[in-house]
Image (cartoon, rainbow, N blue to C red; front, side):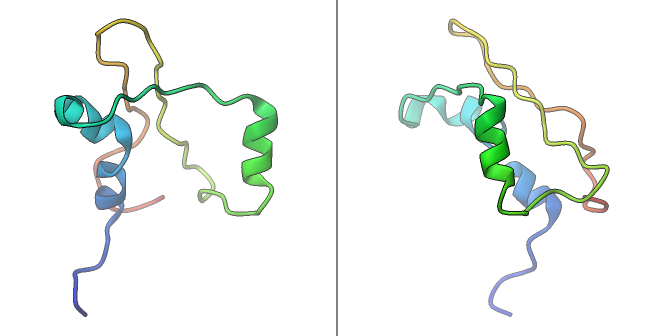
Length: 81
């Protein structure tokens, strides 16, 4: 293969709450907005879902200059979800 296999940890590092706080000064202005239930249901309608027992990371949307991103609920290992 041309590149090593992508791990779960690789995918998790691509989440905005992982990279944006460090790269804020060189990134475009970004604002996270909460999604309403109807829109989430629309996104889920295609049948692509996380495996059972996997909860998506929670993102806290705050205000001001504080870091607005927080990830929890997932371990750092590459197994499972």
